[in-house]
Amino acid sequence: MQKRLLVLAAGILQMPVIKKAREMGIYVIAADGDPNAVGLQYADKAVVVNITSEEDMLNVAREEYIDGVIHPCSEVSMNVMGRLNEELNLSGITKEQAIRTTNKHLMREAFEKGNAPSPKSMCFENEEAAWDTFCTDFEGACILKPSRNSGSRGIAKISTDIKRDEFAELFEIAKGESRDHTVMLEQFIEGPEFSVEIIVWDGKVNVLAVTDKKTTEAPHFVELGHNQPSCFSETDVAKLKAAAVAGVKALGVNNCACHAEAKLQNGKAYLMEVGARLGGDFISTELTHLSTGVDMVAAAINCALGVKPCLAPTEEKHSVCIRYFCPKPGKLVNISNTELLDDSRVYMWEIYPKKGDVIPEVTSSLCRSGHVIVTEETPQKAIALAEHLIEEVRMETICE
Image (spheres, rainbow, N blue to C red):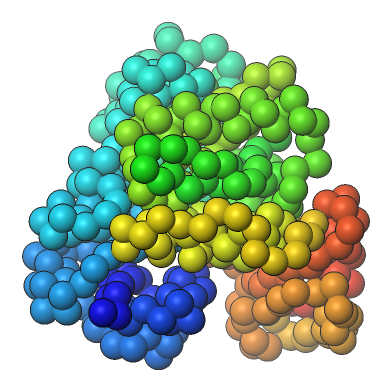
């Protein structure tokens, strides 16, 4: 019997999962609230529905007799996925686990209970209580961020000399971006950022890759690129892996992909968060298979269907880097030098806006203007090539 997979969301980040599942001979039902979602056209069946509604998605799942459900590279419908898994006895995380892995406060509590290393943090509904706690219980710089959101939206670094009115403004921005209208105040960890790509199957936490991240500076910390394998020492990579494994075990998730975020400070790894899903920004869908030879997307699909995933390399390994185009804000008047991207080492590229569009200031991942993925002999060479292309491909803007 042909397996039937429900994919929650059908945007550009979900397209590789939809395509891969069909390549695997699986019948794919893609669901999205946007009738123009680009991934819908690649599915066997497209369903336009509110994917954040548990009851609506339960109806779809029952009507389609699904064998599994996956919500890749996004968090907006994790609770829905957990509910479907429970109601229909499917493989993957429960609703309680979905809530825990999408609420940063509950996640921090689980990390503390499970001895997973993470920053000191507290959760607040109102600015006054947060300000009082910041003034009395924290030393040094802190981070304000939504307790439920992703994509670097609403995040801000605050220094010890911040004024009350500025703190209040940043708190309200974070609260407005939070799906449950609560805000995290947490210790700022100074140091490089990483992600750890994981497949959990039958209780075993399998680390596939450690990803180095490049981000903007404060206050928004938007991700500008990633590379695999890591350029850091074996000792540092081992610490990051251990922290990620501890975090996954603390959350209790099973039979799923995981994407952990971590930082290093003074030789110690700090776990920032763990998502029980494939990571976005092409990390899980493209970079990981290019660098490890392991098809992480296929593995995540099999986990959702209750099938033992293949975690052995099935393709050649490369060093790989992605960098994002972030031109100066303004009206885009010209794009040039794209012929440089016609290079055998360029695996994939795309420029999102067209001439005449307005380029915004980069305050979240949604504000980036394109990407390029390259492969090379070493991660250092891959980084150098990607950054050269980002610099030389011109996107000229004017201020109006």
